[in-house]
Image 1 (cartoon, one colour):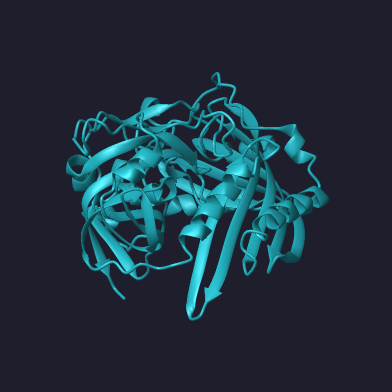
Image 2: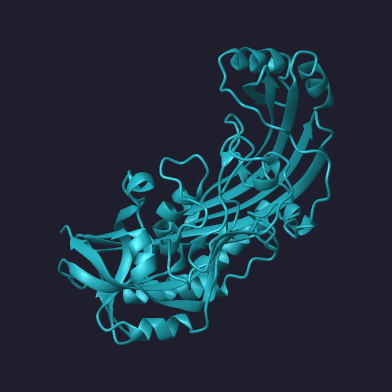
Length: 424
């Protein structure tokens, strides 16, 4: 990294080198049986430089850096105009997101964990076809820049992704869930409980006609529902909110919190080396800060840069979303629904939500509920709502309990009078 930075600074005005060394072990089960075991390592470098106020960027593997600087310089000739200041050396908080025990987990241990999950599910649902992916990931992040910054941190991640499916005649019941943590061991009890409840509730269907209903959004569904809000909070987006703009009722507060302990999405610094801090994006329904990187804000207002891929430059993004909970339990919210829906999972929202604030997505897994009872699984439904209107005018309640979605910690939201379309 030092050699690349020194070479870049011979012709550039400023430069930054980022390194990501990733080690992954993955165990996959299909049809309740071991399907594959794999492991691998990828060590990558990305160089970003500024020359005559134009940005250049290139990436490579750590072993093939010979032409990295010339390629970055060549892209700067036609690169975007950019006047940024890379961060200098600073103090970083000690984020609890690395467990050395995770690094020592073997493939045999992952296989045994998968078998334990399958054995506990199968006696309850004999005809179940279970697919599981258990993965451990160790990441080592390093950054070096021409402003004097030299920093690194490591991150561990354990994930279980479960997919259970049952064919009933021509109907396919598909239930998905998962858990993620930066620390070992993973506790499977909550995952097994959720899968069991979903499967029990989904063994029958219930027809729901097109109309407007109360809708209880489970955390993973809420995460997708909030995508138009997050898009509007992101600096440089097509329809960016103004600071001070009201986007929800006073009960709604949203943070970007990359310091959350034992979260695999947390980090000591963002993708540009800016120290991680918990930042209020929306407080009491009002926008207080944008999700920003150095290209869209001064150093004091940045700190939310992500690298979606190492071959792409950093861009603004949420590092770890946190939505303020309230007091009542999710079961109380469930019991409050006279006749409506609980949505566990949405498909990806239809394009255009970034501009219109309108959320439209098929309900991948949801149930018709009434006065604390599940009437059956719903099929062929699409939910449509203007997210800002829903958060401002239609929010009835927020749960006190939250679910860790890996890169978000979210409660349940109960919305009133939401449009649901039966598309058959």
